[in-house]
Image 1 (spheres, rainbow, N blue to C red):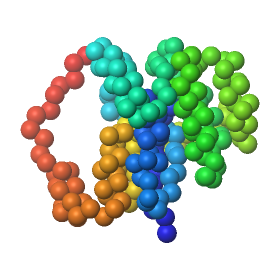
Image 2: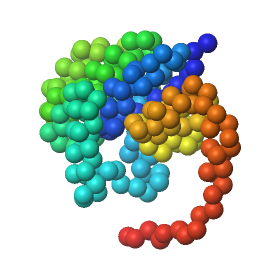
Image 3: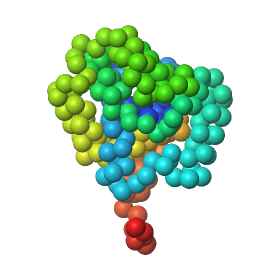
Image 4: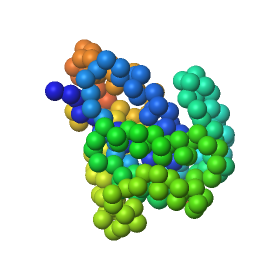
Length: 216
């Protein structure tokens, strides 16, 4: 039976795009089934009182430089959108309305990711978005309350399960965060002995030596 992996993503994240692109190669030869789950990254940041990488001077510029370099290393087409960050809600709701749990879900996510990260254009442009919606032709209305509730509930459920960032891969109750966690995920799925050594669990009990006071 295929191992079931939940792939938590937000189209605002270039690292989620790179992980999405690299995932088939990273997990090649393994009997896995990936379920793509859009969630709102901004809600995760708010829960933990954080800013996104693109909202921090210096880190913002580094993020864009790194993802452009990583893309050419992977052979992945990546052009920075004309503005970033942007409000991803419309794209997330479109994805939720379009995804069905079928193998075609990957093609749907790829189309949305490339809309943001392979065009160099404005993801918030209303005419472009309408063309994308028409192309996907979702069976549900992305603007419906039902779809909005599904996205909110998925985001809340992910946070309750410990998801704190995107991309995150979840399998067997374990979370693997970030594009660079793909080799670690593969190692786990292949039954590497380290994961039974107790070190995974021990990390959760390491005492906190100092807590910083948040500066307002």
